[in-house]
Length: 127
View 1 (cartoon, rainbow, N blue to C red):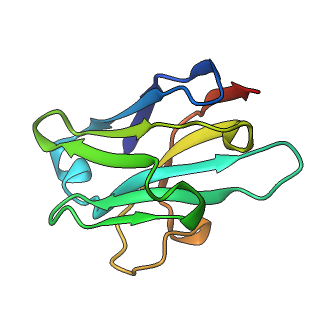
View 2: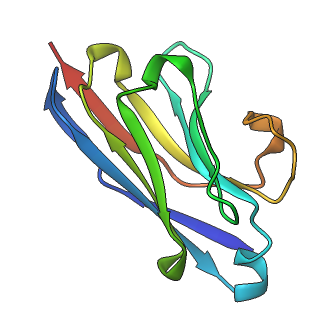
């Protein structure tokens, strides 16, 4: 089993920045089975959407169109940690952000493919 522990949420004004972190904890064989890690977000009354993801082995990344050019996902494999640097934040980015991980090899970054979830961290952007 793998536990995902998030940190870094908070409140900022529009145009500001935040950095989220997600550490994967567990036995090495479980962590090594993870193929991809990343983030989803869910705003009140909306579906949970995939925001960004990174392949733990090759480093290839995915971003939803609405965050391209503003968010950057990265990883530190030695620390089993993934980061999401969020710049030029807008009120529409306000949501609960969830770290997620999958053992699957498919290219889709969607909820059915997720094996592990973090508890969520709130991001609030005021205008």
